[in-house]
Image (cartoon, rainbow, N blue to C red):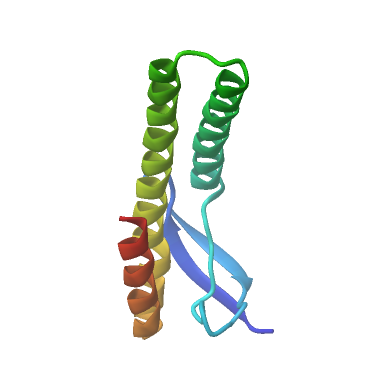
Amino acid sequence: MALSTHTHIGADGQPFTHTHEDHESASHPHGHYHSPEEKKKQLNRLSKAIGHLQHVKLMIENDEDCADVLIQLSAVNSALRSLGKAIISEHMTHCIAHALEDGDTAAVDEFQKAVEKFI
């Protein structure tokens, strides 16, 4: 397996060099890297959405008011949309930029299809 070294821009706006093994596959021939800071933010957003969804489940089990359930579902939807936007931004900034540097235009097409499904 080959090593790949390239520069990323961290959450603090500072560049850093990153080396990793290339994990080439048909869906991601350019390799994949996500900054630990962004990954942590995304996981935190997901945890909040899961917490809201668990609360919705309890509300339904406890026969709570439907309007209140809908408000909580709205919070779940909002959290998931926010997470999706963060993932799109991260992917465009890092993964797609590196894919284009590597000449991998198929990654752009694949990402466009994923965004269309998300929307």
